[in-house]
Amino acid sequence: MFMLSNYNCQVRKNMKSIKEIAWNVDEPTYRADPAISYSTLSRFEREGFRKLSSLYDKIDTPSLQFGSAVDTMLTDGEDAFNENYVVCEFPSLSDSLIAITKELHRKFKETHRKVDTIPDSDIDMVALANNYYANPKYAAYRVKNVKESCNEYYNLLTLAEGKTVLSTDDYQDVIRCVEELRNNVATSSFFTMNPFVKDIEKVFQLKFKATYNGIPVRCMFDELIVDHRNKVIYPIDLKTTGHPEEEFNGSFSQWRYDIQAKLYSYILSQVIAQDEYFKDFKIAYYQFIVINRRTVAPLIWEFDGNFGEVDLKDSNGNILRDWRKILTDLVYYQNNSTRYSKEALANGCIMKIKLETC
Image 1: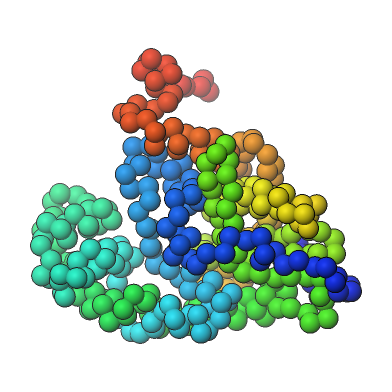
Image 2: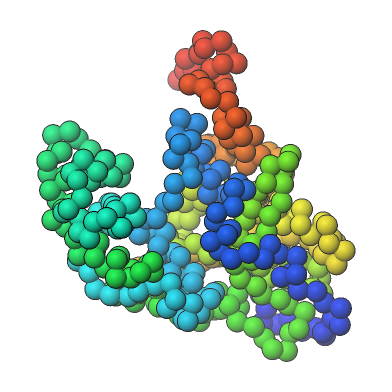
């Protein structure tokens, strides 16, 4: 783990900031860029080629929203947080109802001031897309409950004028997590700077862009710590989790954070290779700072696996395909309209049933 507290060195007169070689665009521009990102690759690997039409749809779950709030408060500060979030009380809603309300508001905010004025068929479509009481026998209840439960939150989204609405309980949890990360002995060195150490650079939310086989790829690091004296760059990512911090190994495989670590490291390596100052710098193992809003006991998880073009295997024996293979498949399916998988076509649409003897 990178630690700063005992580091002591002299200022390098010719030190160049890594910010100078970053892709300097604002976040909306970054999000809108067609270059392939980790989230696109991991979602494609989970959902498959038959869901390409929804691959780029925004995913905005309460858990992702909470993680973004912690990230903003921790790395950008309170002013940035206040520019992007509104904290207020609102009725307790399930994650599904929150997601449904946000989608309805996105689609109908210009034409409908209340949820109960939106056509039943549109409400039903959004509810089903979020797997809310998907059984056909609950159709009437599904629409009725959305209308009765979501009006107040829908109105708050309108009043927020584009800002993210955060409950007071969520806000208190954000503050607890941020204070713990800044003060915990295991994590404080990532977010504080020793004024006497001039060769260490810490930067947050830097964006980079590169290509793989002519295909544009992009990334945004939560944090980079640059050791200019020893020519080492430490990539850091912050993860909020609903599981105990000790169980992150399972989440790592489930959400394919190996794709993130390997893709981000590849992009950064391509960028620094083109710069005279940074070309000899090494990229260290990837570190994930993990915190749960309930246990609030942050841990640092290190990923130092094979970053080459190889597949990995997790502790349960699941094969984690390399991001380059996933990217190649994604581009294939985007360029070839087909009802069949590459494997099925390669086998003449004749598939083998695979069983093993006990």
